[in-house]
Amino acid sequence: MLSRLLFSITGCLALLCFLVAFYVAAEHTSHYFANHNYFFSPFADDILDNANTTYPIALGKQSFWKIFSPYIDHRVAIEHVQELIDFAWTSGVQVLQPYRISILLWANFLIFFHYIIRPSAFTIIIKTFLSGAYLFLLFASMSVNTYVSTMQITWPILFLFALLTFINLSRYCQVVKQTGLSRASYLYIALTVLCLNIVLYTFNIGVVLWPIIFLILIHQRCLKKDSYIWIGLAFFNYYIYLDHHWVMNNVHSYSSHAKLFSIPVYILEVFKKYSRIISVSFNIHAFYQSTFITQVIGLISIFISIVFMVSFLSKRNRSSYEITFFGYFVFSMLSMIVIPVMRNAVDWRFLTVGLFFDFCLLMSLFMMLADFSLSRKSSWASVSLVLMGSIWLLFRFLPIDKQLSNGTYELGFFNQVFISEATQIPIDENFLKASKIYQSSGDLQPHVFINEINKSQHKGPYSFWISQYMNQPIKVLQNNKRILTDKAKIYVAYDYRPEHSSGLLINVLVENSRTPMNNQWQMVFTDKAGTIIGFGISSPNLQPLWALLIRPSHLILWRGAINTQSLKSHDTIHAWAIDQNHKVIYQLGSMIIPTPLYSQKQFTWIWQRTQHVGVQ
Figure 1 (cartoon, rainbow, N blue to C red):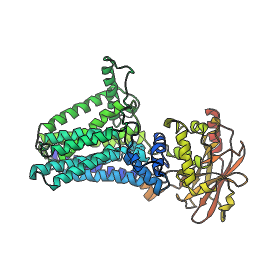
Figure 2: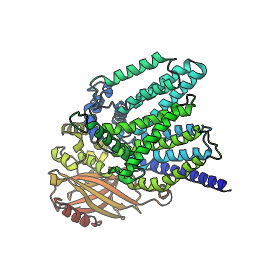
Figure 3: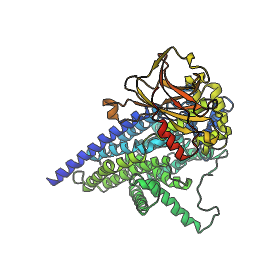
Figure 4: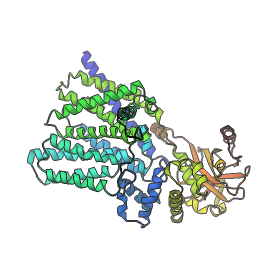
């Protein structure tokens, strides 16, 4: 009786995990399509890469094959192709990003789900729980920060095509064992190499795939059949990839001098970063510091990894799904080891691979239990794992996940900076210093080059129709002027003027209860003479899915920028909302340009003062 009750509770928890995970995945998918919830243009290191590679290719100044050229120690050909598509089809604005990331994540889940429901060693409770856990970690909000830009969605691409690589490899092994060499075996070789190269030319971590492939082929006794083909393809792959000035110059070293006594210290530093990445989903403070608990979690994960690999390799007759998952597990484990070696930080983008490895560790425990031939009806160990995993996901991971990231990655501020370029603010050293977002991407020249191309070809922020009317009277757009009856608040978000630049970022909060507005509307700023001096766009409103369906919010936050070159402090600016489709202009309100914000104290005071300016 107690046994049936416990199994019933476990089954309900597994089902609850899956349903909650499906809701979370659907909600985050809807967030991807929220108004402008992506970077308009490349940023940081992407700017240098675009200036050197993508833009010259798009302009015909360099050969298309330049997409394979190395960027630091990576070859990011797949990202270059995406950026070229954006440049040609969407005016350089990354509006396709929500579609790309949604397709990648959902395809990853559906392929995994197809495999997880097949193993007979797993009960329906375990399959349901593992499917829910994969959805949780795949769509975790702490990974959203790595999905907002074309150059930032490397991990979803890597893990999707790594999974496809091992699926095709496992099918090759099964075909060779059953029928020997055939056309099907050569087809699976071709598909394996194709998927491997997509990983390889997305991020340099793909170089570890070939050793994993050879490990599986040797373990399954399938290498002799086509040894010359496999070895030849691997040699050719490495020769092409590592040639032409590819340099592993990003390796983090503990000491500038190679000393024997520094090696243990270096290994310890790598382990600390590894354990922090693994531990974030258990403890939010692991993102910021290494503690005794994080190191214990790191040691446990390494121990489980070693035990699982020994358990898998001790048995040769493995099913297709076991081979696939083993390759997936080893790939995620090596990624977790290589990242701390290559980088001297625990960054947002590295949490994604940590979540994949979390799940692989969990899956490996279930596979080892299946290896021990525990009865499906009396597998108390499996029940305990489902029970503990469900509690962790629902009551520990979700709160930490929500606390660690709100899913916006300060997109509003970053996109405001891009908009400010189209207001004809001079792109100089003062602008770069004031905007701060660009400081990590090198000197001024790449920014000037990209800005000139965007301006001459109406790309990037210059593709917005309102940018064509800068410094012109607003009456060229004015067919039907109305006064907005909704409430509006106007305030300064950021001031460039203390850094001797002419930019000013302005936010307008509108309680849109009467006037129906959507992302086709645009906000325009004019001076007192009616000349357009800036514009803005609506910011993402990331509401819960239930609220979107039942009680959507009527608040709209418009983020814009103005060029203050021709203005003085205490001049008046006016904010307008323009419905381009119906040629209607609504007056949102006015505000007085404040004195430049030279101190944080003054900034706080003006922020509080200006945000209460109402509609005039």
